[in-house]
Length: 128
Image (cartoon, rainbow, N blue to C red; front, side, top):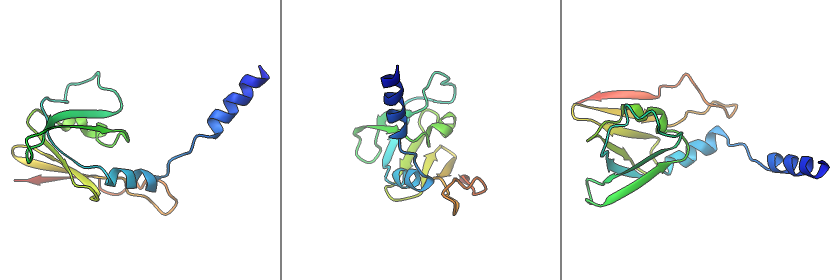
């Protein structure tokens, strides 16, 4: 029992807590340009991590993207069949391009204490 307790302590003490800045930097490295093959609006079974496989409109290749930071999964109910998800590497936002508008969603904004700044704007809707 004592050995199990020591192993338990070792496992949980070795977990590194991610800072707002490191999460933001990871999200800024994402790149994708994929046309959604289906609607995620009514997908209640989807797990916490967003995955999409679809056609890249520039290359016509089949592409796969997985969001392991839960950034995009928070907005997946806005993604419908035919929408294009676009993010350039190094930019702090991604786009959901729809037929009549584009939704611009920003990455986390960090406050001076290293936490998430909840007052910063996250979404901007651009009419076409």
